[in-house]
Image 1: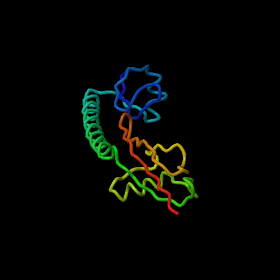
Image 2 (image 1 turned 180 degrees about the vertical axis):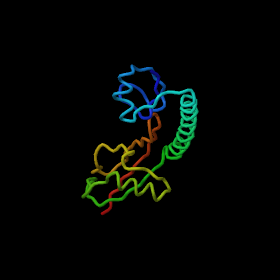
Image 3 (image 1 turned 180 degrees about the horizontal axis):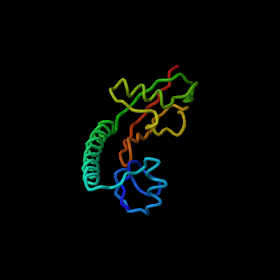
Image 4 (image 1 turned 45 degrees about the vertical axis):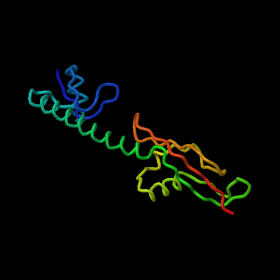
Length: 147
């Protein structure tokens, strides 16, 4: 029996895929849970055009993200924090860096900033920003000590 997946099914296929499955699997599992629909000629054509359109939209989205990542590449962020002898009294975390980037006009989510642990010493650090699979950028974070 041919079916079209309406949702991603782990270990089986992705949304929009046309698959050949046993009738029992389709009628007892996929169809009742609304994970798939029976593949008619019209439905297959509709699923293929939808999949192409989504792929084009994803490509445009990736291009926009890649441009943003290129703009961010090499950006320097300077943050002043109170400290003594190179050690900060507090720490500088992802939220502090994101706030400074927002001042410069960049919209970065906290989960996209790859900061292993809060920065507790003055100095220059490289921080990676991950926008998605294969789209990364690196910024320089300069922590200065204020007395």
